[in-house]
Image 1: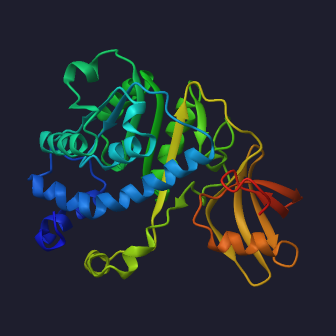
Image 2: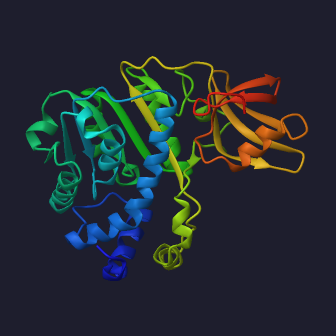
Image 3: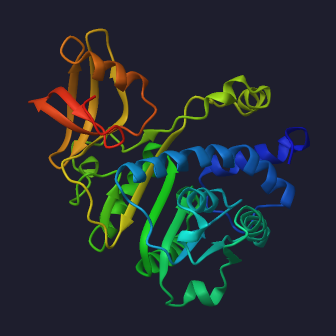
Length: 332
């Protein structure tokens, strides 16, 4: 689809529906053109969030173990395509997509077949969804505010069959804390890959931390800010193109990853003499500082880097005196 072909009223209705947070009574996609318009705009923004999630998983040294990928609640299929595109179609046996709308599953399947001609792609059948066939990787994206209790029960059954799960949501407080509760439920059966650096209960859900929520910010491609179509889209939709908050959890039954890492929650706060950040690690949550005079390179990096904020800190109490990122491999 081209930008000039978008039905802006239909696209606006989908946005309002999603922001309303009410489980739908039935399929809401009206046409393939609705899906194409969504895929070009809001779907692509979701794709940038998935890029950030997959960047972090790469930093942690994680990769899928193959088998079938199931993109549940696929919409236009952007999440499944991002995952298969990042790790390569050769690494999976097949891609299955499912949505309560057959328009969506047809659209997602068709686009994925074009993008990955050597991969078996199909709509997930009722027999597959209700069966016991193992699922290599279960992908869930931006569905939490629409889930009925029955749908959540279906998802729990699929998680039980999965070797790994990646679930990405908007970075809102409610969605993040709800996802954190599910993470704690499933951490009994899985190893937590990211964003957590701890296997025990999420500290943000502990009493006294109600004002916090686990969220991060993806970096959109720099080119969109010089693209008149994207600029017009941002103004029409009333969104800040620079801001892409997201929450996620990645789980794997067989994971044995790095230890001693820390994850910065949200954005670091930059002041003239120091940077203050909310840090999560094996010890729990803590507010830490980086003094500009002591660590000027790290002070600057925390303000400018587009990488996921995963570090191995050198600390003196709550002061960070140095650190390295798994992506960079050396001192910051």
